[in-house]
Image (tube, rainbow, N blue to C red):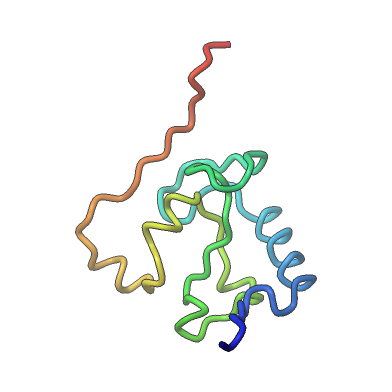
Length: 105
C-alpha cells in the first residue's frame, strides 16, 4: 500500500510561514465576513483555518499567499474544494458561526 502524501505538509516550514502571514493579514472569514478568533483551539466550528481559493486537489498552491485566505473551520468545510465560481452558483444556505460565548461575563 502506497503511503498517503499531503501536499500541504510536504514543506511544513513554508506552510507554517504562509499560515502565519495569512493570520497577520486577515481578520475576517473569507466566506461569511465575520471576525475569526485566532486564539481558538483546532477542530471547533469557529476555529481559524487557511482556505485555498483554488483547492490543492484542483492544482492550487498551498503556499501562494494570493491563493490562501482565512476562514472558519465550518465555512471551510462547507466550501469543500469548490472554486469561487462554483460557490457563486450554489444556492445552499451558508453556515452561521456563533461569535458569542455561553458565559455572560
